Image (cartoon, rainbow, N blue to C red):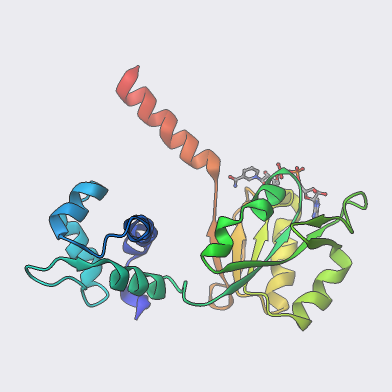
Length: 210
Ligand code: NAD
């Protein structure tokens, strides 16, 4: 089903999920499309259009059932399943991600950490051992690895990514500042560049305040 849905719509889904989660936490069971639109600062028609891609979830005169919509968006995003994650490169960034517990609440389970630095190999982060890169192949072949986060220097990222794909890893969360050259049919890549977001902010500062 997701095939025809634009990535722009998919990118808006986590925000809906976040807001609905917060509503649920504050005990809200039902919300009108107008209230949801005011809360999220998105037009009611945008919300309707977005949700209509998945069959629509609102009811005329009732609004949205918050727990139901939350669950359904969770399913759309695949959050009803556990995704096992490994992190490659346990430096500043890798460690920060490894220590961020909230991902686990969303079903992303950290299962292993890898690095080449002998000074940290064998140490544990939240009870998970940092392994050497020599163990990567064995680990991937003997454990379910759904996602590999790449937080090592960019020079090695492409090689490591190819190796991971050969070992059957189908999703890469790429933080290394390099466009990975991988076959589309065997792997999905999500690139994260905090600096892109910062540059966008810089553009908006320049446009609005300078
Ligand atoms: P860091 O130097 O603190 O950590 C890098 C870690 O990778 C080290 O522990 C190192 O031993 C390990 N490493 C080096 N070569 C390796 C290899 N071949 N296999 C496995 N591990 C290896 O650096 P950092 O600040 O954590 O940044 C890590 C990467 O993330 C860099 O590529 C950096 O450019 C990138 N980064 C991206 C963003 C972003 O927004 N995408 C933000 C910050 C950093």
